[in-house]
Length: 376
Image (cartoon, rainbow, N blue to C red):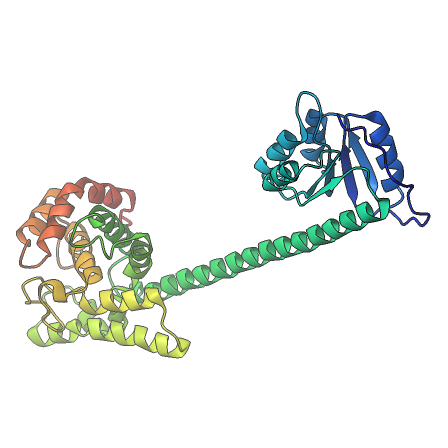
């Protein structure tokens, strides 16, 4: 218990309360004297023990600053300070120890707990008021900067969300254009998007792919997959919608949808004047998803690891969905028939490790197809 007397009386000039100060002391006379000094300048709350002080600090109207005695029964000032600093709601309230304990070790212990100042009794009212005003000003600045930082974080989050929404809308608008020219439906786009993500998730811990297939890349793959056939916009209806088998010449024109797709995305990049990650992945998928592991695909006849991982994933997803889907030129295959075709393509059409991963999660592909069927 600290009973040391105060050295002088409060100053004559008062000003309106501008902040709330909580005084914590178990001695009633000290609370009375501190109240008479501070009420001319601040709103004052008092607590005669630690539990009450913590309750006030954690209330809906917490103090702006706490003057805290050390020697109190049941819970001393050190423990009160320790608990204040442990609570997110109160850790930023400045604490000034106001005590008769004047040993350096006492001061060192108080400051180590997070107190901003340590004042020993008897006090000089002008010095006490000056220190209180200083720490309130520092807190006001700190609160302003913290609020400003939170505001900026919210603004950045909002702008980021806006960009993401614009990206998503742009992707869907571009894919909708392709859908209007093709027999494929929006559910084909949705299914292949989910197949790619599911297959990538299965492969993310594989030694060949773990360096690439992190959360960020899988999200980019998911966003980019819908643009895989964007180049079909440039294919004539007589070829794109032909119900029968294409001639050699027609197939050569159909194959250009890969280069047309890449060119369309490159043109979008040029107009933006900057590189965008999901467009870079989209280019890979649009241009190379018809390549085959053994080098017999198009447009460049790439083989093995020369084919981008994104395009290899898309190849499995696209072929599976094409097989299980009804087209004017073919009936729909069953899930098991489609799986058999994928397995037979291991090492020639598809990356062998991707086929193994596909086999492991084939049931997930079936569930996706059942959840997003084509309209009857």
